[in-house]
Picture 1 (cartoon, each protein chain N blue to C red):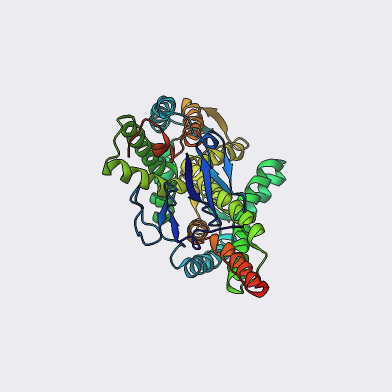
Picture 2: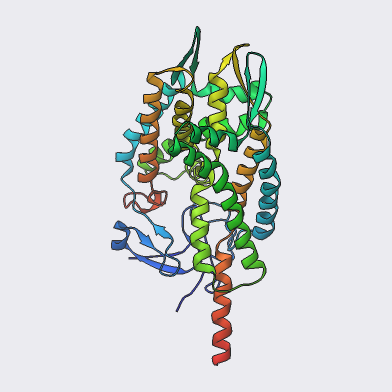
Amino acid sequence: MKHATACAHCGLIMELLEEDMAYECRCARCHSLIYRPGKAFGFILPILFTTIIFFALSLSVPLLDIRIGDFDSKIMLLKTMIQFFKDGYVLVGIVALLGGIVIPLLLMGLLLVVMLSVGHKRHSSVTLFCFRFYQQLREWGMVEVYLASVLVTIIKLKNISILSYESGLIFFAVYLISFYVVCIWFNPQDIWNQNNVSD
Amino acid sequence: MYLTDIETSHTLCHNCALLNPHHEEVCLRCGSEIYQRKPYSLAKTWVFSLSALFFIIPANLLPMMLTTKFSVSSGSTIIDGILYFFQEGEYGIGAVILIASVFIPFFKLLVLFYLLIVIQLKMRGHAKIGTKLFHIIHFIGKWSMIDIFVVGLMVAAIQFGGLLKIDTGPAALAFTIAVVMTMIATLSFDVRLLWDMENSEFDLKDEKEN
């Protein structure tokens, strides 16, 4: 069986064979990625649940404890975003809050709805809305950038303070790794490609 | 021979990858709004790229962080932050910040203007390299936000009253706007426009040969 599609980057019409869909396919003209096989949703769902749990944990406990002399301060995920609002930089705060917390949270929720509903063999309007919303939002998640900035901050602060690593940092790292795995393993086209699902 | 979506009168859905008949405005499978080429792609990319260029200048000149030590305030720009890491011997992190906060925003803008000029001047033979550069800027775009998150973390961490206090500097706003503008510019750009020019070149060659 053949699936006709086009390259999203050069417009070339291509036909993918059913047996080819077990492998990564690239455009014959511009070599952009056309299709990447994903893992079964039943396999991704437990990891997604883990991601959500670790995200909640990393939000609720501090990442770092900083001590300078008699002064002590704790860094929490949400506190850093709120600080921009306190300083009067509302726009910066909104972008940071959206990229670091709100959008990743939305992405996880949308993925959960999509994968659970596909398991029930139904493509309701809610599922399709969640799918479209996920596709639009996924460019804007910035969690991995946030983790890199935590590492930069640690190096910056270690020279001027006594730093202790709190459990939140481990929760945050686990959350990020599991979220990354979910994003790699989830192929949006599998909603329709899975043989046991009817449109 | 290469056949494209325009030549076969089809429209690709960017969300579910279904090839729809050209007359459809909404994807038959997932219900997404579909279009053969992104509407007003060039105009939008020009506007957002120029806006980003406008904001990237104050983002690099104004202070990113304001440090108050024993009630004496001083500001530090992005470059000051990078120099700090190099002076402390942290070359790796210094290089990461230099690449993410200085090189990436300018590189993105440079690529976007190159792609826009190639299409506006109808310069052929740039589609392959243009697509590769587009993939690169699409991938690295959000990493420029690293400096903004570092500022947020530093400001949240260092609030020790009159002894030591860090506040957000005005460059944070300009920098955030510049990064968001370049991200929107990249998303607005339709890279297929580069290949459409190559297709028209083949058509011209075919017509001459006939």
